[in-house]
Length: 102
Image (cartoon, helix red, strand yellow):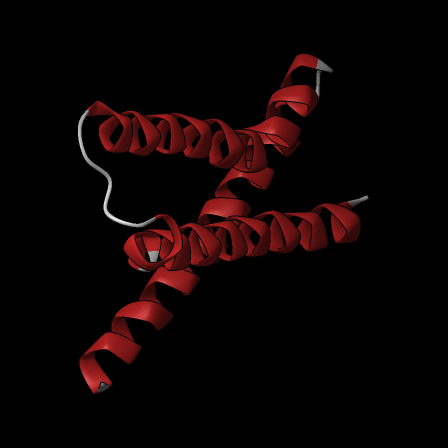
């Protein structure tokens, strides 16, 4: 179970990274994709994307640890959450190093 949980935390962190890359690409190219947004619709689209993103990333990071915690596996839940956050920290460090180099 421990080995599966470790790989699951890597997968969850990778899912967050992939989602962030996709949303970043859409935001970077939004004007080419959707054209110039005028009025309140552009702001609404951004806020809805922001809210949706919070739900998706929250589910990826907290979903499994929460079900484990509520199922009585309190120590394993915290360990899984810390492992997922650790992998996200590794991804952040890699991105920051790439930004420093480029």
